[in-house]
Length: 362
Image (cartoon, rainbow, N blue to C red; front, top):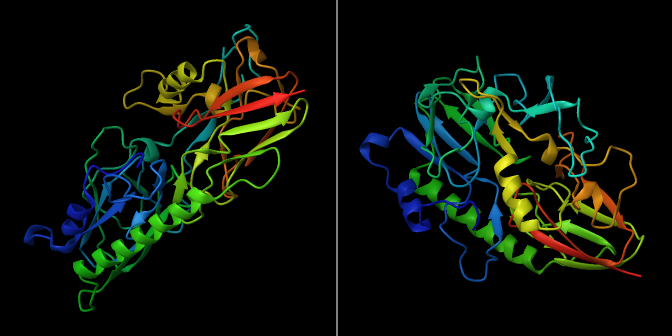
């Protein structure tokens, strides 16, 4: 699976079911599937944006240790507040000098650069006690093997946490008095297995789904409960010149994607991988931001988009970030027509290994 855990499933379950004495007051939760690779019959381009288990119950004073099994983060909002957004256009840091290959400035010059709040990008220190007074976060998983993020909960209550990298991905920690019973590690492990088995079954079903709408490409298809496919469906679409084609997300998906056209998608994908998310300036600590070139659509909002393979001087055309959630400002769809017969390749700037083709005929 893409962005998968480095821990085998059997070992993962053992770590949940047989805690040592030193970790008796700590429960483990996986951010992402606790599995090394997709089992037989499960599509290899699938993933599961979910916490395993989605809910845990602990005693006051105990801790939760989140093991990052993929590109995920943990965000626990301040009590009574919404979680910080993944990124916010910062008007004090406007996009400047972003020109296309023909030398023309993109429309979004002057718009705020999408900056990540510090609690999202860098997080807060692991091992601290959460009281609700401040927002907690693991920060971006910037290393190949991020360390577990541990939080102690001294107060009884129910706490909802999020992965802001994936809209709708959330979990729950219930903290009860020491006089009350909590599920055993064995019981938690059984729930993880049931949850994982159900998600893998969903992936198999998604693998067989076909796009029914004409002149439409779907990123996925995905479920609304976590299982997703890193593909465009159909991978190759045939259409007619000057016919609108809808490039869309699955409603309710936990993923974000772009539909980005280029003459050389492999080279463009490598560039996007380097530029999409990076420190802004040379501050210490660093401020992380998304590149306006890849995050914003290449065409101004409200523009009727036509493509002939030479746009912007080098065939660049970008939908900007899309998602299927109504809780974010990103659009769900992007519409484009092709004014010239030909075969045009595109990719996802967030996941450059996702590629597709559209062939337009007269």
